[in-house]
Length: 428
Image (cartoon, rainbow, N blue to C red; front, side, top):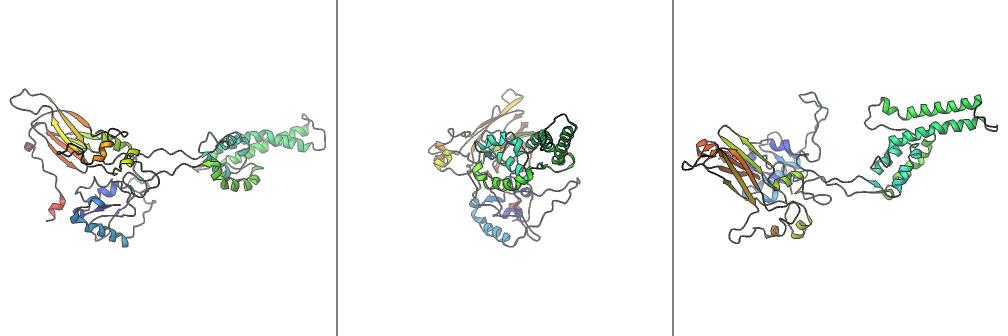
């Protein structure tokens, strides 16, 4: 289920939604009078909904009856639409290459749970750690594959194993050449021939080591390649395919990490809805107080998603939270009969919607979950002290954001502020 752009966008085409879309699924073409959301790419992240200045965007299931025709209009647009190619080689105004949007979620919008890297099973992890002096002799492809399977450089590291093996060769090569030089003769460690062989062995070992670490000295590669020793490259021809083939037996693979956000329908793995920003919204912590010349503006973001838990699944709760009920109070509205005070407290109380006749939640399923599931309170209370002597205030709720305008003195009507304009009403 995707989001749909409806009639208010016609002839407006504000691109704020395009800027916040994490998957680049909002498009239009020459001659069109509105924007469209690609239903095959949209991940239902809801990032576009609150930024639309004309309230034109709604989830497909929430599209008003008078705008249901836009569901089909949106779908037909993408039957013939061809997305233009973007080039990363283009430069922006600063001279830096432009980076096209990639599949994913902005960091400020969602935090996915950490998923552990692959790990070598026991006892293979111990064998890899202890065998680094020998395994370091193999090819760079073998060591890179093994390091990725280990998932932890403390277990196995291409650079460390190659370095250890190079140190081992400083001893191994002189010994081999020493005994080769005295083959069939009595070995004499202090003879000139013995010293020569030892010297040649050291030179060969040092030269080989420098060659194996050449990428560290002169290469610009992000991932240096650490080559094989003279005797290791032949063994690598057999060992590398065997290592790749035995991967499933050597490592324990973690569950695939989700790549979508709350509300998505087609996902791999469990839906993870408890991102940090949404959790803060449930406690009223995403808010802003702005001081203007004659008034204060308080903005509070309300929660959007039901936090994921076993209780959500047990009671069949929806992904989206209903709009909270809210009440706003002034601690000391100004009156000429009372002594003026310099500070006024604005208190905002919220809760899940309640049926006034029964006094119970409109959706009784939530009664079994709120206050019991982790980080899921039944609303919140936020208190904002301001330096003002207001008589009243004005509230405006839209797109899960509550805006409160509190005059510094007098009434809201005396401010003469223009009410927000809904562009759909201007079309006539």
